[in-house]
Image (spheres, helix red, strand yellow):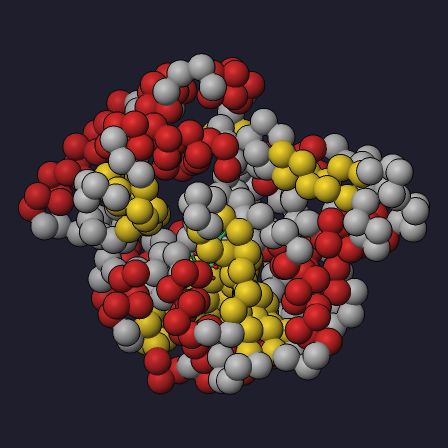
Length: 393
Ligand SMILES: Cc1cc2nc3c(=O)[nH]c(=O)nc-3n(C[C@H](O)[C@H](O)[C@H](O)COP(=O)(O)OP(=O)(O)OC[C@H]3O[C@@H](n4cnc5c(N)ncnc54)[C@H](O)[C@@H]3O)c2cc1C
C-alpha cells in the first residue's frame, strides 16, 4: 500500500488513486491543499497495484521510444489571437487543433473550474480549446481522468494529454502499456503551486475590489510577454493587472527560494533528458538576446520534439506556425527549469502559519520583500515601458 510515501516524494500525480480496484484510496489535502493519497484499510485488498504503478516508488517507466537529444524549435502561432491569448507562442493550441481531426480525437488538459481552481478536463470539441489554453500556475486536480483516458484509448479513440512531466509519467505508469493512439505533451516546469495560497490571493483581491472574480489570466501580455503580468477581471468590471515584480502571487513564485511550490518539486525526477513526453513546450526565454528578430515580446515557444510521434504531429502543423531550428544549448541557457529543481524557502513553516492569520498582501510583503536590486529592476523596466523600449529576461 502506498502510504509509506514521505511527503516530498509524492508528486500528487493521482495514478494510485485512479488505479485502486476497490476505490480504497482518497486524495486528501495538506496545509497548502496539495493532494496526497490516503488509504481506507477496510476497503484495501493489499493487491499492491498502487505501489507498482507509482512513478516515484517504481521509477518512471518510459514505455515509448524517446530521442535522447530532442529536436529544438523556436516557434509561434501565425494566428495573432491565439498567440496573444496563450502563455508562450500558442503552440499548445496549434498542436491540439492539428490533432483534433474528428470527434474521436480527445484533448485532455487543465481548465479553471467554477471556483477558479484547476482540474483536468477531456474534450473532443475545438471550441473548448479556449478553456484549456493558458498556464494555470497551481496544481491541477486530476480526479479520475486517467480512467477516462484509458476508456477512450481502449475504444481506439485518439487522446492527446497535456500536463506537468510528473503527471504525464503518472499517466504512462497507470496505463502500464504503450498505446499507439496516445500522444503526450508536457511543459518545462518551475514547480507547481499550492491551491490554498492561490485561493487566499484571490480572496484578498475579492475583498479589495469588492466583487466576485470573472476571469484569471496569468502571464497576460498587456505589458508584453517579457514582463509577464497577472490579470484578474471582476464581475463589477474592475481589473487587477500587475507585472511579475508587483503581482503578489508571482512575487512568491518567481523568487529564488519559493514558499508555495509542492515539496516534491525541489527533487523533481523529470529534469534533463530524455523527456517523458512526445513533445515538451515552454517559453523561449533569453532568445531575444541572441536573436532579437525572434522575440517580438508577444510570446515565443520553445518546442522540444522528443519522439517520432511528436515529430509527425509537429510536421503536420507547419503551415500554421512560424518555426525556426535552434540548438539545445539555447533552450537550456534561458530556461534553467529544464535542468534544475527549484528550492524551498527555510521560512516556509512560518509562512503557512501566517497564511490564515494575515491578509495575502501583508503576508507577501512580510516574506517576499523586494530587495534593492529588484527595486532597481522595477524602476528600470517602468522607465523602459514608458519609453517603449523592449525588455528581455
Ligand atoms: C505550473 C507551471 C509551471 C511552468 N513553468 C515553466 C518554466 O519554468 N519555464 C517554461 O519555459 N515554461 C513553464 N511553463 C509552461 C509555459 O507557461 C506554457 O504553458 C507553455 O510554454 C505552453 O504555452 P503555449 O503558449 O504553447 O500554450 P498555452 O495555451 O499556454 O497552454 C497551456 C497548456 O498547459 C496546460 N496547463 C495549464 N496549466 C496547467 C496546470 N496547472 N497543470 C497541468 N497542465 C496545465 C493547459 O491545459 C494547456 O494545454 C509552466 C507551466 C505551468 C502550468
